[in-house]
Image (cartoon, rainbow, N blue to C red):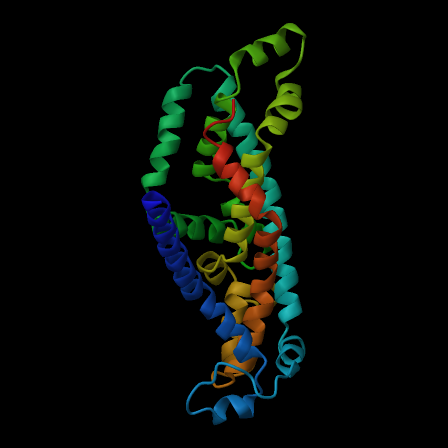
Length: 280
């Protein structure tokens, strides 16, 4: 009885802490949505902020698509995200397979140099990429936006470790059967390591959707703006700094795809994290 009571108290304390943390994390989202359904006049009349909307309206969401080219920003971001993620997945899969299964001279040295790149500050890489893209005359193009993001040393390392956890016997058996390396990769490794690859895809999609510094540097024409730097243009030249409800509506629209993505694939993310170090 004593241990049961102690367990109940401990669990109650844990759930209380988790509930408090959930409130802290979710409250900004609640406030963002609440502000987006308040009219501009009612929002400005609130000298003391209210935690509810007395007369909710969806006019701010209509303005988000009519007053500014938000739909264009969303389409640009969608194209950038899909293209970058697809190309990156091909690149890192082939690179990870080469480091995990193929034998070539200097493989360990090359992989060590790859890992060393993770120690270089991202700001230095951005400067180098900017100079390169500018010299190639690729500014204000989707190619210039996509090219520097089509590989990732961390994802190559993560996928290589996952590939190596698949038994060598399976690879040797496939070679005895006359299976090519590419067929072994596509028919054996990728299906086995699918949870990790799905996790990588989701993380890359989130990274691309939230990308800000690089699009801000490489584009200064509105037709190439992504939502991350387009929202600043909206704030300056669209609704104006003082129209907070309309800005919040635009932010809700921009955030919604990522929220839906996470809710739809949260189990896959957890599966990828859980099995990434134990698959074999």
